Length: 161
Length: 162
Image (tube, rainbow over all chains, first blue to last red):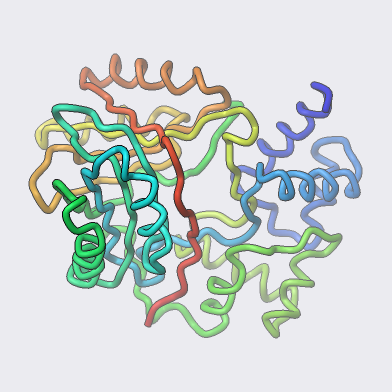
């Protein structure tokens, strides 16, 4: 891929990062804006989907508005040499939407495993967290749950500003 | 909750749109028409429903979800411990940076002080450190970065709840 090619992809990202135009032929309109054909817009989008640059195309809901009023980020201090095995097991749980190994920030932050759980109430989420705690057993040295109480910003990616 | 929209304001058609259109939106000449067929409605109705859902903030966006890392960029979780008396100022400062893609207030079950959690998205990996420095300078508070070392699972398709 040459740099001009990259630059067209980048323009397509910038033109769609706020969302697709809500018109009958959105890819046609994007092509007109970028000076390329509708076929090229569709080809590039398909290529970005295949390579993972685009994770998916569709609706991004506000969790709160669709009933997930309790959003808990559970954080765990587990042994570093066990984190991959434990992370893979927690990530498989159907109520866990994101699961990551992240660095500690000692002394303020001792946790190295993050698992996001969503539910309709804090009690429901805390029940799920208790399930994770049981699964981790003695490998869990400490944990906490941080519930979101307000969305302060949710714009998504913004490049080229 | 400021963003809360009553769940009973979502009708069956909107529910189907939210549950079934979180991915897989077609790439073809008239994608809304094609997606509408699957939902049992017509193109014009799908477009007007999407406009309504975006206006009501039931949807925050409709379009491609990018993985900036795959374009050579970076996406990093970061957090701050913001004193209550300084809260409004720091929210305004942090949110003013375009690199801040999402920002959430969080409260801990165990009273830890990390109460502001945001995601930095930049076009280059070096952009993260620059953004962290700029936010620290503008806010006067430390920013803790939590770059992911490994991702075990990511799936973000939540169904509408009753």
